[in-house]
Amino acid sequence: MSRSRPFSLQLYGLAAAALAPLVPTLLARRARRGKEDPARLGERLGHASRDRPAGPLVWMHGASVGEGLSLLPLIADLREARPDMAILVTTGTRASAELLGKRLPAGAVHQFAPVDTPRAVDRFVGHWRPDLGVFVESELWPNLILAARASGTRLALVSARMSPASLAAWRRAPAAAHALLAAFDLILARDLAAAAPLAALGGRVDGLWDVKLGAPPPPADPAELARMKRVFAGHPIILAASTHPGEEAMVLAAFAGLPDDVRLIIVPRHPDRGPDAARQGAAHGLTVARRAAGESGEGARVLIADTLGELGLWYRLATLAVVGGSFVRGVGGHNPLEPARLSCPFAAGPHVDHWPIYRELAEAGGVRLLADANGLATWLEEALADGPALDDMAARAAQYAQRRDAEGAAVIPRLLELIG
Image 1 (cartoon, rainbow, N blue to C red):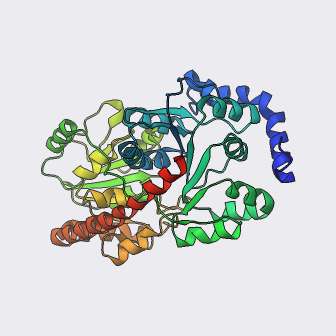
Image 2: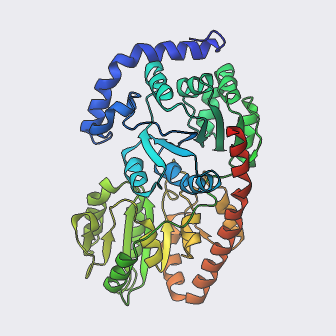
Image 3: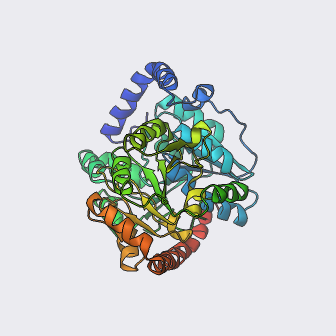
């Protein structure tokens, strides 16, 4: 262990090494609960399941689904600029692995991120030998970052942000925070509000960039879109996207008073909550179908779309949407640019702290921000009755998304400079 590390990070490394013998058992338990892929537990211990491609390698890391998918346009741009480069993407969740396995382009591979123990990260770094590591948002794993840096990997932290809780925790170990942030050759904060905490911890913020700007719209299978249009033909459709516990009940209560011809599609953020959402719909006396159960939704007033990777399908189908993660505390909202890019008019609740662009989008007339769930029924009724106003909102949202998406073009050259 390097003596140049602050004492707090030396203690962290010793504690991680001491706990390492317990990790296989903990991973096995998580696998039994469906939290880990049992066939790929070795990756979590740093054992690669793929050979390292020849030539320069860019390694990108994001925590979960949102961060992993946000890397796709960056991967495409880097591959276009340097076709000789291979891409390694690491994430930490099964859902992200499943989605990225379907959507990563040729020349890019996915691995689960190693647990942050010294031996696991040494195996990982020793096998992959990345030329550049790109971390998204706030995934600061000390052993992994410092091992990569010590091996000669250049590092970038992009779309960087820090929650108030994380900031408070790192302020209790300022030397450790400074050492980790100093390991990065490039730090791009998500916005000005995110830059301030990073600078307060001693990070050198080199500019601003939100990695989730510039992404393509979420995809949809054309044949399935055509089929679902036939299923819902003649019915206005409300989409409740990426809902969290408590939000399905709010949306169902607002929906229950709408005319019988209106249909509701609920997409739980975590598909395993589909059965619970279906029970709630039935409790309101509504006919409910579940997509994961193979039910088409024809004849049902509520469809629970408890599948992964189909949000683009539902946004294209919807008359209007309600974006979840915004009516309950602790989530911070979900990406407003996904419906905006697809010209789907939408509303959200007040808890969108993780997405400052909601305020900008609202000022541009591209989203309706509701003070609480009590106003949801009124907004749904008024919005469905005013088609021209919905069209205007959708157009304003699309214009805003196009403008913001164009801002990421200057990032690629900065990353390529790090590789040389």
